[in-house]
Length: 353
Image (tube, rainbow, N blue to C red; front, side, top):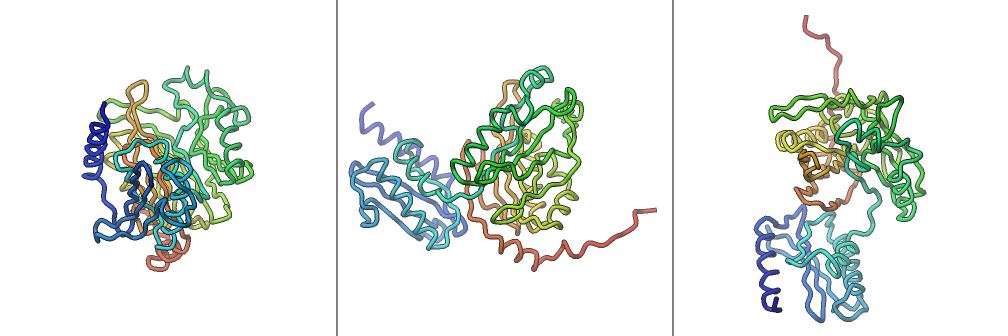
């Protein structure tokens, strides 16, 4: 393929992406471009037609030359710093039709540095297709390789890390669907076993009977973290607002909802449920979700999202396998609860006669 054709191919990809992507005041667009000599990044509010901030390898702060990975990292760090000064907490990433590797990946990851909390989706160690596969694969928490690896990763990165949920052996031949929170030393600070089990028969022929294979949790859990309190839930729990009310009433600032929603139920209910739980509780909702098609044909919905206490979606991964980010300020929790103090207004009442 000639250079001209590669450029035209990239332009076509970029035009297709830009039809679906636009920066807003709440979540502007981070646009990246590079030539043989320089690298450029801009954060743009497309609705207002305004560039909020910019950085490039020509800036004196970069102190680097050439269009390479090392320079990209410095440009990424500089645009992140300037974004903070412009009160930009999250962006949509426009890679200009370039593949996500090399300079583009380095710039993006440098711009994203500073994350204090990272969450993975539900069933992130493995997702068994049947009882035989589950029994052959699952291990106790102390022996599970994914759990051990995530603990090491949390310590290496010096972050709080939530293993959204992992399938582990419980009592007898049943499993538990457990969410585990690690601190920056790699220590477990909280464990939560999924309380509500998914026993349903859908119109498309899908049948799920988790209670036949899993033990239900018995205890609501809040992880006390350096930057706030995290209420822990898993997937189907999101349909039970009483659990979320209890977590918020006991001081949760954020609630995690790692999930593997089916495509059918996700399309109908996922965003509505998450926004409702955020609005009802005045909490941030962090919902990392599986996406894709499993070996048995099961389709998971994706759309990892971050929701504000006011019910606004701050970031949505859509149907892509990607990482999403948002700047979280717990003052927004108190602000939302002052404006709508629903947690304080609950009243006891008798059921219908």
